[in-house]
Amino acid sequence: MSLVTVKDAATVWKYLNGVINVYKPAGLTVQQVRHTIIGNLCRDLNELRVRPPLQRVAIASGAESRFVVRAVEDLSDNVLVVGPRYQTEDLRVRTCANHGRLTSGVLVLGINKGLSTAFRIQQNRPLRVYRITGFLGKATESHFGDSRVIAKATVDHIGSDKIARLLASMQASHQKKMFELCGVDMQSQAAYDLAVKGTIRPADNSQPMIYGIRLAEFRRPFFTIEIHAINETEPYLGQLVHEIGLGLKSVAHCVAIRCIRHGHFELDKSLLRHDWNLQCVLAGMASSRQLLQEHPEMLHQTSTELVGIEQPNEGEDGGRRRRRSARFAAQDKGEIYGDGGNTKM
Image 1: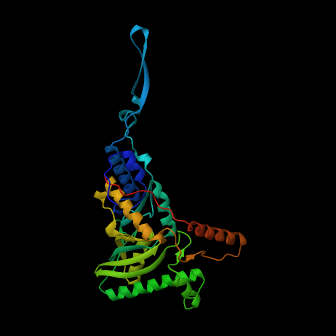
Image 2: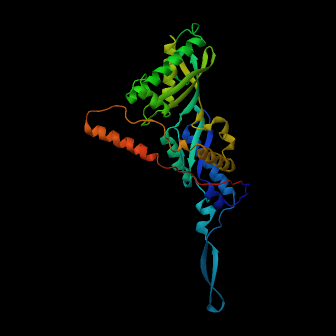
């Protein structure tokens, strides 16, 4: 379908519903990114053709004691009095992941009616892929490079093969933990049947899970690892780098975290900071809408979930967990897409 040039703000507003994939720079919080995008969208909408001020009826005295009735501009509806037609309070924006300030990379946002789509993506917990760079030889208070150094150690004995073996051991321990939480033995047929159904997802957002971890690059004292995870947080990833340093008989801290994929949203399709404008956002919504139609599992998961972390003896707690599992299962019965179309400014 060919693109249509639209200059009317009210028409464009009807299509401003959906999800977008933006690139979050390091050093900015998610709220700062959100406020910047909202401000840019309001600015571009107000630069289009907006509705004129409302008219009011004015009655004035005329000649020969007659009254003159006429329609005049209502000054209480003038943009100089009430402000721009589109303001920041009119736009609703929701994020699918709460990245930390030091994390950069893919950030999926839902705008207006796309909030429901963003919520569905967040509840289905798709895998996120990170490239994390660590620095060997120094440990800091917060496990990141912006805090005080508290320990130092030698790194001459560390090689790429030693890091690879440690990461393989960590991945195996996390995979074993997934099946233990499900209550099955990794060597059993039940574990195989559970694995072939798809990615095992925890039933809540409080349990971090690492599905894959490998060494991507090693240049002493810097090393870069690639992590496939769910429910991870920035402090958790920093703690993971610290544990890797301890496992190598040394110390380490995290210097960079970049999210390169969120589900099927990839880094090369993200909107850079200079693309956070109305036209690029509308094009990004159309691209995201097509991506979700090609991969409906991002909104409707059919893979395995961990329905409970423990099996309590109390009937009340067990019933609460069963109700929580049923609630998550009920949320997977429908698909919600944000409205919109192909529009060009």
